[in-house]
Picture 1 (cartoon, rainbow, N blue to C red):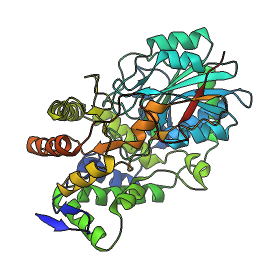
Picture 2: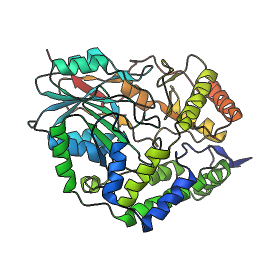
Picture 3: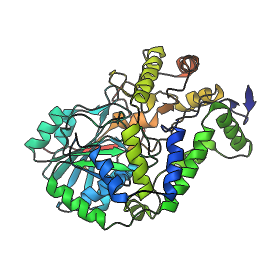
Picture 4: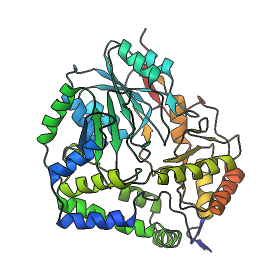
Length: 432
């Protein structure tokens, strides 16, 4: 059934939500029960940290942003030190680097393989470089062998951001990175509606982080309870019929559903950002995170991966998406890059698929350097990305219908490295 929402676009009454929260109702009800009987905080904190024992010593934090901020508070670097970063990240990561008096230096991302090129990283290294941050994006993994060798050669700290690529279980072997960051925020795999884990190999650095973390106030149980209530309501809305009706109601009242949904799932922001992230998770949050780590079924990720491969195989071969050059992809997000994102989004929404270009918090890392080079591939991708609804609950016929719309309306984006239209796509300086 189709209902007109505006003069420009008609929307299906039944609509596939842009992303399903990766949590089952039993865990949500368990979270509610923890509010009244949160358990022993120190005990549940150990449960979380010991879940990552195969990877190394760990610290449970409120979010990856909290852990990254704490990490940079614990290093002994001079003001003006540089941190090389994958060009696509959440904006807060670059802001945190700058807040500590350091300079983010972005390196471009290969769209097909979703990784920075080793030559670009090497070109960005200079006398002030202190660390390399590699983000594993959209559900793919970057091989760290050569990057680790490069970091060792220049005595740099190697940090990996695994927030988008966690596959349901901690890895069985230690990472090549010095620091590994995992997120269990609301839209992440195996979400606990918040919480993060920092795996830190250097015992001295980890101890500094523990001491700093101990000074933080504990997030209130009431605040966590409000979050649980909100996501219970959002999970109830995520089925096609109620979600379609919700979108129709908003559009009929003149409200932009895309902006509203984005704000509803947004994490920390605003003038109190650093105050918000400098908290420890409450006991109920830790207990839920421990439960998720111990009981999550990785087959959920395998099912999502299978759906992603099905959709990829249905798309026209000339269409480009992040990770189209690798099958080692768990499709945390299916990020399509097209020349006409707005037109395609409207066509998909009219067909009942709530595609979007702006609901993700991902953006190009800004580098304020006069001698910087452009990260044109990442910038073009973020300007032309369309995030597609994709999750195990989508039936095969839904994937086929969505692929049909994409193949009919979507126009192939520029080849990787194509021209960027923004003046802000400036990145890693080249040191000679």
